[in-house]
Length: 64
Image 1 (cartoon, rainbow, N blue to C red):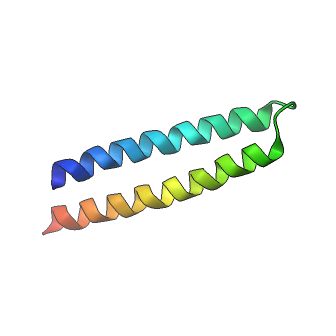
Image 2 (spheres, rainbow, N blue to C red):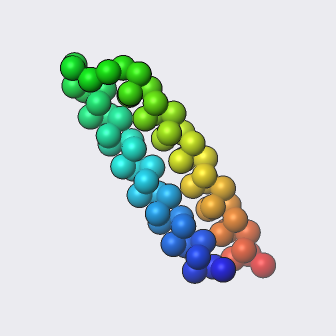
């Protein structure tokens, strides 16, 4: 179970970073649709929350 949480944590962190970079690139380009950038930033927040939940589960599992 611990290994699964570590793998999920790494994948969630990579997904969060990817969405963050795509969102920043989209905001920097003037020709991009602002709704798309807003949607990407919303996904970033959702992925960040999921990453934090996984991290908290992993920390609580390591304490016990």
